[in-house]
Length: 499
Image (tube, rainbow, N blue to C red; front, side):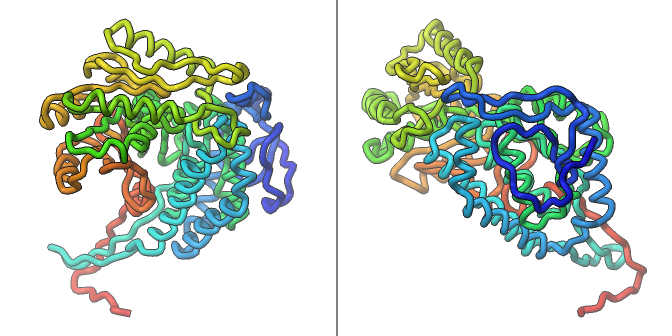
């Protein structure tokens, strides 16, 4: 590899062709001769290209991260100082919001308004939450036990391989890098092949904010690149967001070397609508939480459980709400829903719609490829009624704008249906009685839950039960997942100074 940048303080590079890899904070020529081409899912236009890093490139990146970690250039930086730098990244993102939004929108096709609310706001939120957690965390304590006093310290886990999904790349990259770097780790980032330019951009912001360049590398590429990162013996932890199938493979590979891992995986969340709901006030939010990001969200509320006595009324309100959500290009200021990420994904969603119809479900609102948007992978929403929870459309994560309405007769049945899933990431309940909603939340096997709305709070733990993953992100729990705990026994009779 040939270094071509003398200083990591060079101007941050955004879109376009990026023929080099960011290794140890410097742009260097890759070993691999292959490239990844990036195309807009909204227009089909070419956005740029990046190297398709091979195992040699990954080895170089991990070597740089290991050297940086072992040197203590970042890992020995006081937590409060690390916190200030992480918070500065959030400030930089806010300052360059328009530029970042344009880049993310070009790669994934989402409308700018959706990127601002679903990616930039939560992305800067988690960065500031990790900064707060690092400042407040008890990095050292003393405990008195059977054999006297023990000093307990928390130390960074080491070199982290961070593998990101494409659906909310700005948020996910901030979440993974923010937590690992706040803990004092070095990071090798592997963005999704659909959104590598966003990953490169955000990584450079961390360096600009003050993280030593040596502590950050980015290996752009596909599945093989991620596999090489997971398998590398000098990587101490993998943090992954993506499909459950890929997560299981990563978890199995990490188990071979007892490598730590955090897995944020799929979901098939249920929204339980109770019989006392004010549907006029809640129909838009209920429907939006299943369709936002064109349904390409692990926390999307795609199973809508409704009391049979009010089904027609609720469904009618949902259909009107879905029709009001305009599908369009990022350049359309009225657009709320963008395209599916690829043509393959659009075809997959359409296949699920056909499966639903063949199983006996009724599409009261059916997807279509909207006229005038032929260059992109657009699809309008589908809402099914007559769905039973054993149907594929109710059990499998579709990752598209498809909602399944399931009728129930009593609340116990609704709770049983909600829990009858391999997943357990999110869920909601819709009611005028908040205390009743809280009681129901205690009976649902999911890691996160909302009453009359849903959001991922930056200060609170986020993660799933069952096939939705292992570990937690966000806040103190997210920081702690990148730490090791060390116990040092002090001599018997030794008294710790109070100073």
